[in-house]
Image 1: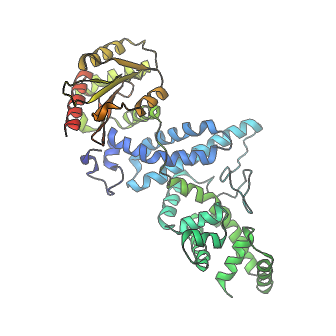
Image 2 (image 1 turned 60 degrees about the vertical axis):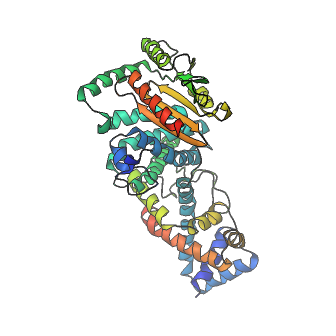
Length: 204
Length: 236
């Protein structure tokens, strides 16, 4: 990447937003390479169980949509949450469309967390429980960005260990190198943070 | 009441990790303070939120995976159509207009051309770089301009055979396949007509280099710039 492209970048390792806004091909190459793992992972998360062949297309379309929206972006750090939110909403929209066709009705299920397992988790799409499914893309991006900023390691990892991977307190303590008593503290603070950011009461 | 103790018991029960003793303790707490039931239900809902949000957050931290080669041209086309070319690349307005027409024609033909010539040197020194040139033509080489572009490539790197690719996956495989070269520097030159650019990647003395050259004026001029770039990168 030419050094000049970073002239108005605020972060050393991130693409230069000014260059992106002027359509600089090299800056966009860098941005696409940086954002691809995220949009692909989000699309895969939503579509793999139902329409795995659509994952790549949705990821590419998400980056295309991001190009259209870059003029509204104020800082380069907003790009990743924005890309994730676009990919999420495109994937959910596709699922709704396809399932509505199959069912012959425009049923508006939430397709978030299709792969969740364990006690509370559900293997079938749920209705109305997700704070994500009906959020406007801009708001979703803002909340994702905030979550990413506030749930710093090891809190985010510990939350994932417990809620996504079903690890017990003792297993988490061992793998993360923290006291067993600290695991619950991290979980409690993490959930409180998420409750504050995602404002579940307003959305449920 | 111990908030943390209640939270830990609630979490374990919600996650179905609690043993009999812990379930009994939680039941006792709930019986003693009925208002905790509301908090327990909130935690159940918080858990659902966490299960929705955390996978997305993990996806945002994902760093593995490479953009497919075929997607790059499509995305760069979107960039050009949406944002135009950067001012620094547009030295003269009439040039931009002229190129714009060529670009539209290129898109209309839906042709992506990548030119690669295999394993021949453009230089004659013993340690001269190995150059590979290739051309991806998804339209099957039917466009007249392709012939001219091919001739320009051959003229620039005389004697180097040009290989045509008809799909991106073949090109991707080719891009990953580097010649042995006996320690000589190597460079791959890819002309992508649909994207209106020439991409260069190479290796020299254990160092990797790459650059994209938008075709601003004409292909011949751009290829000269590519040649200079490769010489600079491989003489170090």
